Length: 167
Image (cartoon, rainbow, N blue to C red; front, side, top):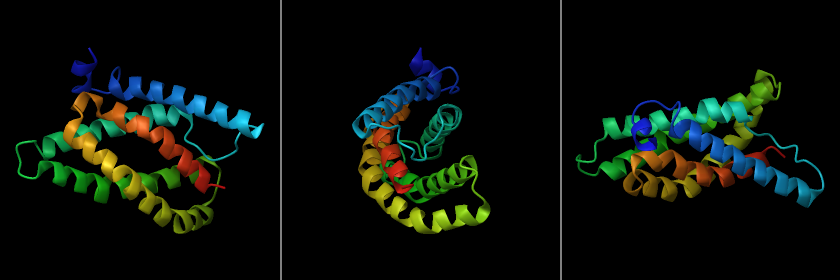
């Protein structure tokens, strides 16, 4: 059922199923941090609903778009997909992350702009270091129906890093 759903729409299917699994992992991580610190961490984070309705479907459709736009038969398809992801999707998605987080925290445009100026470039560099090998494996070796799941497993740790930038 998941394989059939992954090629149609993200609801119900991998975009939503994997988002639920990621939320369970993210909640477990937050609970572990709160027990270690003896307080609930106050770092910025994507609220559950935003990850569920936004990042899961966005990732799902992006992988479908890449599969359609750069089919596996094209020479150097894996490298082209990786470059598309790393040079177009990653900066845009990271910028969107900072804009949405500023909005959800009640910040004004000046605060959001300052946050982007101070944290975007270091976060993008770390994104390229962490996600480039992950996405190389993901777009070249992971079947399309499992790409969102694979990315979400790594995203558990990535969101912890992004949350640490808010301190």
